[in-house]
Image (cartoon, rainbow, N blue to C red):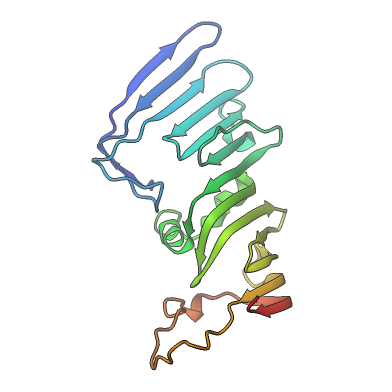
Length: 239
C-alpha cells in the first residue's frame, strides 16, 4: 500500500527524438499524502511536483521533485531498478545521480520526530520494514535542526547511517549526545551502542518539587525495546 489517496490532476508531455522523455507535472491538489510533517498534505493543499523519465539509452533516468521539500535523481538499466543508483535529497537543493550502486539520502530537515514515522512505517511497510531498504539504501547523511526520539529532543543533530553486509551503522553528533550504534540484521543480536559523551542538564536548585510529575517516558513500551549492549565513555551534568 502507498500513503497516497484522492484525485491526481496532471499534465503529461511526451517528447520523441534524440532525447525522448516522459514528463508529468501536477499541483497535487486533490491528493492526500499520508506522511508525517512536513511531507504530508491534505487534499485542499497544492504542492507543485514534477516527474521526468528518459525513454532511450543504456540507462533510464528518473527525476522527481516534490515542492521544495525533496527531490530524487535515479538511473538504472531498463527494467532493473534494483541495479540502479540514485539520490534522495531532502530540503531545498537538487539531487544528483551518484556513481555507486544503491540509493543515498542526504540533505537537511528543520525538525524530525521519529514516533510518527515509526507508526507510518508499521502501517504501510508490513512486517519487515527494513527488508527492502537494506536492499537499496546504502547511505544516509542528514542535518536535523530538532530531532525528537524516545522522549529526548536534540538540537542541531548530524545523523549518518551506513549499510554493511549484515548491519546498519548509525553515527549521531549533537551537543547533548555523540556516538554510534550498530543495528544488526540478526533478530537475536543486541544493538551495540558506543557513546563518546552524554550531557545531562544541571538540576535547577529553584525548581519546585512536583508530586506525581508526568513520566517523560510514559509513551515508551519497555516490551518493544530491543536488547542492547551500551558503552558510555563520559557523562556530564551541567556545563
